[in-house]
Structures are given as C-alpha cells and as structure tokens.
Length: 145
Image (tube, rainbow, N blue to C red):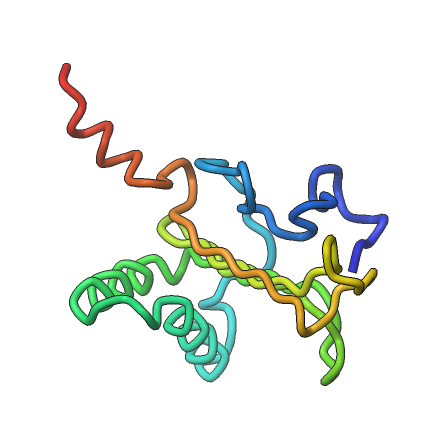
C-alpha cells in the first residue's frame, strides 16, 4: 500500500498513510478523494455510519451536537480510499471536512512481525482539522487581549 507515485510526505515509516498521526497536532492537511455529497444517498448513509462508529462512545448530547456540525459541512466533506477491495485486502480511508477528520489504516508491524499492512493491525485517528486540535480556536477566543 506504499505506492511510489504517492507525493512526498504522503507516507512515512511511523504513521504510514496517516496524515494526522503522531506529532501532527494542528496540521493543516490537504483534502483528497471525492466529495461525499457527490456519492449516492446509500453511500452517504454508509459514510455517516462510519462517522457514527468513530463517535460511538460520546455521550448523547455532545454526540447529537457533533453529528449536526458534521452534517452541516457534508458538502465540504471528502472521502479518500487507498488499497484493495477484497475480503483480505488491507486499506486506508479518510473522512475529512472543515470540522472533522477521521482516519483508518491497516499498518505493517514495527514491533509486530507483519512486514506488510495486515487487517489485524489497525490504527484509527479522530481530530479537529485545520489547526483546531485541543480546542485551539476556543483558547484563542478566551485569550486576554
């Protein structure tokens, strides 16, 4: 799943295909893939089901607010896929909008023995994109002037 045609910086040994991985706090990540609202209604429902899975442990009221915020930006939400489509094929995907970023990747091993990405070795990431990690925008609003 490391394609030589990938642009520089699109793959690294530690995070592999993840763009928002370790030490990437507040990174502004370029959009890749297709806009979700260009997909069929059935596909859009699947995308939102994936988003809901990432947020599954959130309490009901924050979850409701977060999903509303994500839906508000659905016309600006991109879906990117790298990898195969077969039952045994590893893959990577990213769902990204101005207000949400979710990544899923099958990794090769660092301490594990799999030299190639494997379906049993999964990394997921959830961030607030475009420099908003850790409430950065809120902190700026509250900063004394």
